[in-house]
Image (cartoon, rainbow, N blue to C red; front, side, top):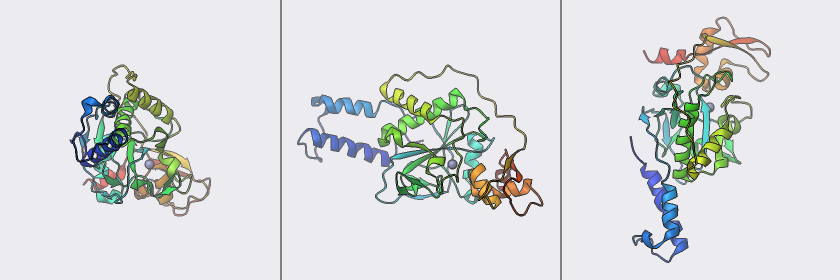
Length: 294
Ligand SMILES: [Zn+2]
């Protein structure tokens, strides 16, 4: 566990240096005399007011370098589309065959797992565009939220609390504008390729909580007993829509990872061609994970 990455320290220092530049003619190589500058003191305090939440590191190999000039300025929220907990999802991401990853996974009880360091480019958004800029993985932090993604499983108060504390810390550390906290479904290309986060998830609740956290007015939810894993049938039925031609298309949409098409194939033996209106079984559990983990 690292309290703060080298990359974020550099950003923080450069941000402080820029502030100092605007406020006083202080050469950048001189130590800043913060005690004589109340404005800078206040800014320094606010930059550090949200503590980094505890995270468990379960590394994934599925990442690469961010482009040299990339600055983290966007946070993309996903649902995992799995019944498994954050550790199970991290073990899935730990396999190179998953071909996907995220920087963080938020469990149903709000606890956090980190598969990829912030300064690396994790593979969570795929073909994507935000505010006219393509390849969102280059400049974003990806957060997976444990939820099967059927718009039925609720997101608990404890889970929202974990998301808000994590996003609040990221916003503070990287100076991410609040209107750049977004969802995979809003950045995926072409539009409609992704459905996460599910319809019953509120980004507004996250943004409101983060704003309160940064203002010092955040009221955490009452302590609750741990949320038990959802009791789910092995699969759910979905209807094929026009434009969805392969199991890979369905896995991309309903399991948030096109490489999980093998799970859909295993549940639908004998099905070869997909037609609009056809019913297809989509797994609620990560069969691929169990196969790959052997
Ligand atoms: Zn996603």
